[in-house]
Image 1 (cartoon, rainbow over the protein chains, first blue to last red):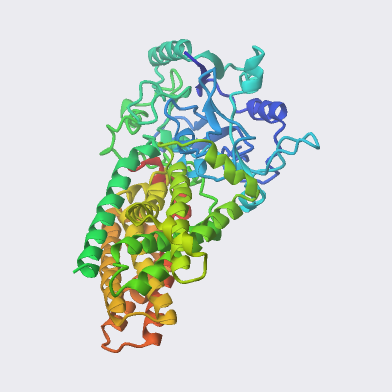
Image 2: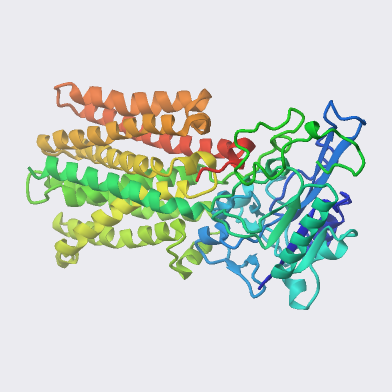
Length: 275
Length: 334
């Protein structure tokens, strides 16, 4: 099987080393200094040039809890590298491929910036970015957030996590997994990771922590995720869809609807014009 | 939820199993009050980057497809000769304008060619691009033959029309182009669009046919044509427009809360005024006036076309708003 990530949120300490390592290795621009007020999360979301995002859920304990404890959850979010990837199916140029490591990769020189992958990702991962500028040695100049929607008109391309295709090529571990100090992000063979993750859920259960795997043995149309998560909260709390839906599953109904309507109007037209 | 060992919380205070919602079993159980169902209400999905170029393309593509259908539906050997001529020229002109808009929105024009590297049945956009490219063949052949007939081009070009082949092809591809845009939009993760998978493609077809009729009628009013042609166009346009109206109401009911970005607030008011009111009902009333006048046709056509543009614009802008609703995006329509 291919390679992927197992992100164990019970081990995450919210240090954001993964975010920094990703930005460093992939030469991605910073996200600016905007204060969100949403716990320690000033990154906000994954984006065209933000390929790891540490989400923070910080809230007071329930009122009836005995001790004043704060619920304190972090998760390092990333592109899920779906088995059936919405972005890849939508791409009209074939720029988005599944590479030899079974990961979903965007070829920036083939991408033409049509932007169809952006609304086709059920996880809201892919976004458009200003094109690579190889002359000045900068791979990406900025993302859509700082330049609003100008990216497409100025010839943008789609950007997202490559699962460090370049590092994997030379046998290195992806930058985020390498930098993670607690092994909350584990990289490896997906089958192996899944087995390890299931053992982890059982071990946590034995210690009184209920958790579950998001993206393993799922009944969603996107299939299992090459980058899956061990979570302790409902998916919505981490801004993950409860049950992601593969956009292409809507196509049969859509084509049928158009065909029926067109046939009916053509018949009406013939009745009117050819009587 | 990670209850520390020995925290001694009573069993009753435990929130429901965290995976309940994910596995679809916890639908009936509301989350405890202190648990937010969203992540700081931040958007879960990315909004599409489509601006006026794409809206205009969706609109003109619909009109173009409608004209393509008319070329085959109307009888060029009968009284609708002028109508077929105008529909051919319109389809040809729009087939030239549409790629220009698509190229424009890609920023760097040469990148349009990347679409032509592959034919991909899974990608509605790839299908649409090929539909557009293929449509330009019968549209050009038909227009060239028509121009030869009208004495604008060398006479031998008459023969490129290959009527039994070109006309059905133009009609089929035209119908495809009116509809695929709706399929493209609804096969995304945007909740409003995905919810409309049975409505949006049909809406696009209706709006396209009505727009094709309106554009042809307007051109006929300017160049002159048989009175009967106007009457027929008006009838087909009214049927398509009222089917669109019914579908708009149907989609509003079907979409429920997910339809709010399209049907409520300022956007909803604009849709009701420009598309449903001035774009559908007003032209039908105008057409019912038993006067055959150029100004009446031009006004009715302009209103229909404006309504068609506002429909596309509302659809795209409402999709962007829908992408920003994390609650809708967390429970994606199947």
